[in-house]
Structures are given as C-alpha cells and as structure tokens.
Image (cartoon, rainbow over the protein chains, first blue to last red):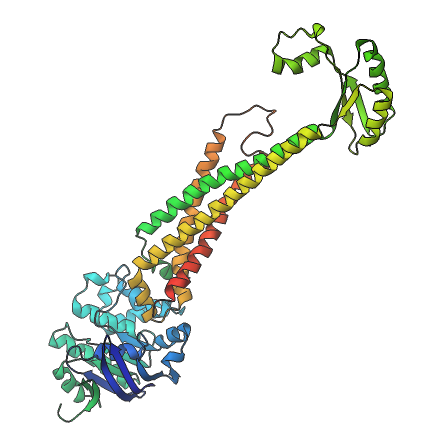
Length: 223
Length: 286
C-alpha cells in the first residue's frame, strides 16, 4: 500500500533520515515515534506526497510518487486520510463543511446525514455549525479525525493527534482509530506519547517504528 | 459547483475591490470607446453619403459668354447618362456659401463670381472622364468637380478615427486582463492556506482554480455592469446636437444595445485571465 525503498530525505545540508525501508500493509497499525525533530512529520508528508524523497522511492498503491501527475497525486490523497498536528481547517467554514471537504473538493456527493453520523461518532454533533476557531483543542482534533475518515480512506495518517489533549480525550481518540483499524483501515500514528502506544498495544496488534540516528528502526518488546 | 464549493474561497480580501473597481472603470471607458467607434463609422458613412452622388460644375468665363456656356453645360448634362438632375445655383445661394468665409456683407454684384451648377448623379454615376471631355469641348470654362478631393481625406480621417477607437477598445481589454490577472494572483497568494488545505484533502487544480475563477468572473461582471450603466447614463447626459446631427457622438437607436455586450466581454476576459493565472500559480503548490 505504502512502500518506502531506501528512502532518504535531506533538509538543508544534511540528511534527516536515510536508508528507510518499510511497507505499510493494508489493515496494519503502526506507530511512528522518535525525538522531536527526528523527522516524524516529514515521514508522514512523504506518505501522502506533500514532499518527495531526496533519494530512494516511495510507492503509493503501486505507483511511484515521482511518476504521479498532479491529478494522480490529488486522486491518491483522496484515498488517504490525514489528521494534521495543527488540524488544517478552513476557519471561515463550519465544522460540518470542513468535515465534508474531502468529498466536496473531489466532486463527490456530500450527504448531510453521513456528516451528522460521523460528527456523532466523534462526539461533535452539537458543534456541527460552529467555526473551527471556537472549538477546543480536543474538539478540533476529533473534527480533524472525522474529516480524515469521511471519504472512507484505506490509510489513515495522524501526526501527533493527541498532542494537545488530556489523557481521557487521547484515549477516546485512540479508541476511534482502533475502531477504524478493525474495519480494515491501515493506521499510522506519529507520536512521542509512550503511554498512548502501550495502551494501544494492549488492544490491537501494532508495530512501532522509531526514527533515531537518521535511521528508521523497528521497536518492539521494550515498549 | 455546489453552493458549499462556492464558499470555499473567503469573500474578503483587497483583490475584491481591485477587480470591482478595475472592471467598472474599464467598462466605463469601453462604453466611450465604443461610442467613438460607432460615431466614427456613422461619420464616415454620413460624409460618404453626402458627397458621393453630388458634383459641382464651375463655369469661369467672360461675362458675355457666361450664359451661353451655362446653357451648353446644362445641355451636355441633360444628354449624359448617369446624371439625374442639375440646376444653376442662384446668386443668393452662392452668397450664402461664401458668407461663411467672407462675411454676410458680401457685394456679390461687384465680384466676378463663377457660375455654379449643382449636379445630382444616379447610383451608377456618369462616365466622368467622358463628361469632362465633352464639357471642355462645349464649354471651355466649365470644370466638373465630383468632390473626390474632399471626400477621400474625410473618409480616411473617419476610418482612422474608427481604427484608433478600436485600438482603444483592444487596450481596454488588455488592461482589464492584466488587472484581473494581478488580482487573481493576489487572491491566490493571500489564500495560500486555503489552497494548501484543498490540495491536502485531494482537490485537483481544476477544482481550486474554478473556485477562484468563478469568484473573479462574478466580481468582474458585476463591476463591469455598474461601469457600463454609468457610462451609458453619461452618454445620455451629453448635450444633443439636434435631430439632424446624425453623426454626433453617442449611440443611436439599436446602437444602445451594443454597450450591453461590454460586461459580457469583460467577464470573458476575466474568466480567461483568472484561469490562466490560477493554473500557473497552482502548479507551484504541492
């Protein structure tokens, strides 16, 4: 589904990471961890084509990122849901409209009841018509999750989705993602919250990837 | 595009005023340029019509021969195909023509004025070369003047005026395109975050461009409609030159419908300028 082969990414003078080989299979659950600045967000951006690798190849659904046209890239992004660390909402539009954006922007029909059901699922039905800046951090993260899954993506990428949340809210968000994974969605969560990873591993078979020393390592039992 | 898709681009921003005011101003100028174009066309036609089928024969001869040469000329004209009518101008009529240049107190009876014959030609007109030869044989003092030396420069001037006003219209279209392109570029730059989010959720360039282009085109069409209306009202306010002034500046009759095309044309210019700009800018966004 998403395959990294000998991927390196440079920032300025040096390599952020290199020699990355990993495959995210359909239905898999991965955590990506590592110290701040290690390249977790960059790794996610490579997964949905916002960045191109400096070396190596990233293959998404069988197509190399470099070989994709701009329309191919847009279509591919329609099959990947992303929860951004800063949510990336259009602040002048309501939460309902923001959540429906992946459908609206790709010319698909947006059913009001689908959005209502989804907002109910993330506990935001009452905030459907509110503007994003009026929501709390936790509410924005849940709205971002709702937007990421509205188009039934095959992969969900989340960048520090619980970074601004208290423990209860983090648990709730994690539960929603585990529920999605059980329905077949591949999940990749970038986080440095070890408690979240331990909680998840007790409920789902999750693999932990760690970026350290410019390399991607597979962590495991030590967590 | 759905109602929601139409709201994706925020309605605020200084580019909105740039498009409105720019389109309104250009439309206002376009109405005047259009009026000038149409007036120049009418002027050329009017001058052509006025001079095309008339001619003048001037007889300069000693007083003793003036009447006989006049009779000879009229006889030649009566027997020449292509001449519809001819008449000798009265002294008063000649005086009226000359008073424009020499004043009303002209002592006509003391001046050796040539005899003037006004000639109306048929649509096909006479064989002018043949007529001149016959006149020189029958009345040596007669000179046939078909006004071509006056008509050609007047028509040339009117045509050039029309060409210049068409050029002005073209320039107005070009400047409108530049204004819209600049406004579109500014709008895209100030909405970089909107574009980034749309790209991230899978929107294609065409969808994003359409949202901006639609907004630009609507604003340009509205501004142009206002500018056109103001221009037409201004044209109505121009002082009338009287019912006989068919070549006056402005629109006449069905010609008043022509400026209604201005908002449509400006909207089309806006559409293409904004689309080209949007697609160029979007290519630089991942």
